[in-house]
Length: 395
Ligand SMILES: [Mn+2]
Image 1 (tube, protein in one colour):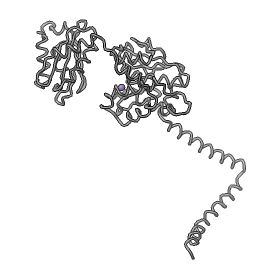
Image 2 (tube, rainbow, N blue to C red; image 1 turned 120 degrees about the vertical axis):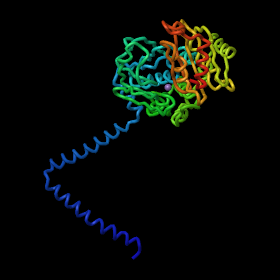
Image 3 (spheres, rainbow, N blue to C red; image 1 turned 60 degrees about the vertical axis):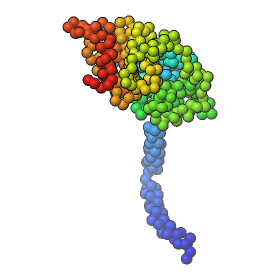
C-alpha cells in the first residue's frame, strides 16, 4: 500500500461517524414541523448576522465613531482652550472638515486671546474663522466638542459645560458624554485628528469627503510641529506616522508663511533688552525688561535668552498695568522652574507662580510687592536675590 492510499483510508474511517451523525440530524429535522424548522433556521441566521453587525459596530475605528457622534447634531461648537495654540486651532479645523462631510454645522470658539505672532500668522494665513467668547452664554450651540483640553476653562460658566466629545492628549479627568479619546502618550492632539481623517479615507485617491485640503494638512502638520518642538520633544511614533500621512498634501509656501511671521517691534525690543540687560550668576540669567505693552513678549524673551551658550536656566519679568509677569525656562536638571518660581514669590501676598520642571510662569501685583499691612515687602533687588538663591537651590 502506498502512502496516498493509506491517508485516504484514515480519512474514510474518521468520516464514517460524521456521515451517520448528519443522517441522524436530517432524520430528526424531518420529524420536526417544517414551520418550526424554518423559524429555527431564520433565528440562527439572524443571530449570526446580528453578531457580525455588533462586532463591526464595536470595532469601528475612532474616526468613524467620532464622525457618527457629530452626525447626530445639526450644530456643534468646537471649543479650543484659552489662548489657543496651533495644535488646538489645527484640531478645530479638522473637526470642522469631519463635521462638514455629514452636514453638521460648526462654530470654532475660544476664550482668551490669540497674541503670539505665530498663532496670529496661523489664523490669518490659513484663513480661520474663529470666534472669541468670554462666557458660556456665548457658546454657539448646546453640543460642545473640546479639542486639545478635556475640561472647559478660562471663561465665565466654563464649569457648567458638559461636552459631547473630547479629543485631547493632556492628562485629566474630563470626558465627553458621547465620545472621549484622550491619549496622553501623544505629542499633539492634531495627531489624533490626522488618524481620524485617515480612518475616514481622506488622503486616498478616492473622491472621499472629508479630504485633506492644503490648508488643513498644513495646519495639522504645523500643530504637530509646534507641540513637539519640531518633532524633538515628547513625540510618539504616531506623530511621525501622521507627518507621513500629511506629506503629500502639504503646501510648503503656506507652511513657510506661518513658521516665519513678522515679529512686532515691541517683541524684538524686549528680546534685545533681555539680551543686553540680563544679570548672570553662574549659569543662571535673570532680566527685568521693565514696562511692556505685550506680555506675550516676556516668555519669548525667556526662550531667546535660553539660546545663550552656558545659560541653563533663565527668568525674565516685566510689568504691565500694575502686574509683574514672570516667565522662566530651565534645561538644568537641578532646577525645577515651577517650584523655583513658587518659592521665589512665596513671601509676596496674593502672588501666584508655578509650572513644570522646564517651564514656569507667575504673576504678582506691584502694589503687593511693596508689602501689605505689617509685611515689609520686597524691592526688585531683593526679589532678584531671592530668585537667584531659589535657582541655586539655597532655601
Ligand atoms: Mn496640544
